Image 1 (cartoon, rainbow, N blue to C red):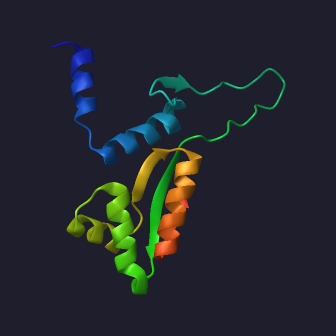
Image 2: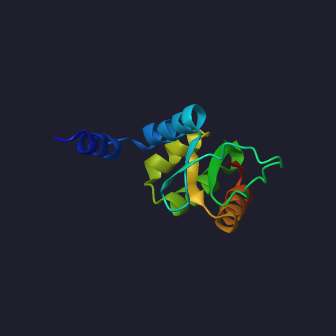
Length: 127
């Protein structure tokens, strides 16, 4: 089996958490970030005398940060609706905040999700 196939098989087998960690490692170590289309892009090396213009972020992760205990059931319902999780999984999700509800969504969708969760009694963070 070729090295490329082995690497491809290993990448395909990564869990979501491991894939996120791999992305952070590549960014921090080599300056490589995934582009919107999924291709790998090298970070600009800088130079040319002018300050580099910061790119506007187009992809957001909506992370559940906290849940109001009095409104937990409403938050669980919203989490179920947004993620497609079952009742037990959504309850476990709400019991242990700090995980992303949705990843890689547009600013508009992130704002919509944030509003839904906040109205239900949760606190979110956009990353």
